[in-house]
Image 1 (tube, rainbow, N blue to C red):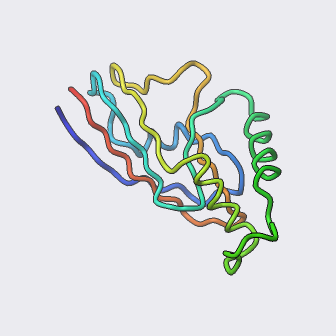
Image 2: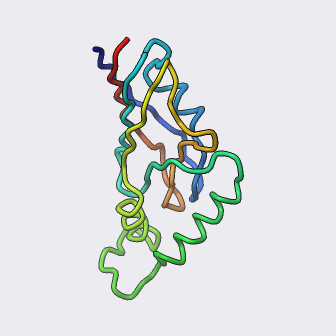
Image 3: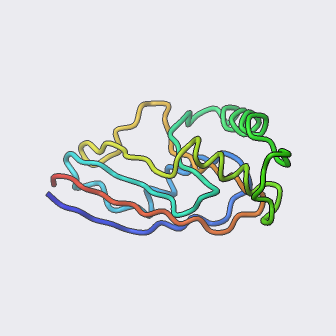
Length: 141
């Protein structure tokens, strides 16, 4: 059994749902020797999220962004946390809805994702900075 951990930094991205599978795997612990295991990803921010979803049609990412903006609008009159801009409180709510982490199966040196699945950074702020993710791999070599 082995444990390995690394930090992944993603350059600032625009608000929206971004397919980041390749970029994450390039910086994540090396999966190729892991016969069976789990890769846990945790984003160290409260205004962005991680998700697994459609990896082929970019319309899905656009539809998700539009739906979330309808579901969690900016400038809602009941928000009290407004000092950091109109997109901040909605970003926190979206983070709670989507979540800050993923636990993914590893099999024979690769993520065991479905054919149409990819990893998303869900960026909920208009002008976010670098996003940092803790990647922890545990498994049997």
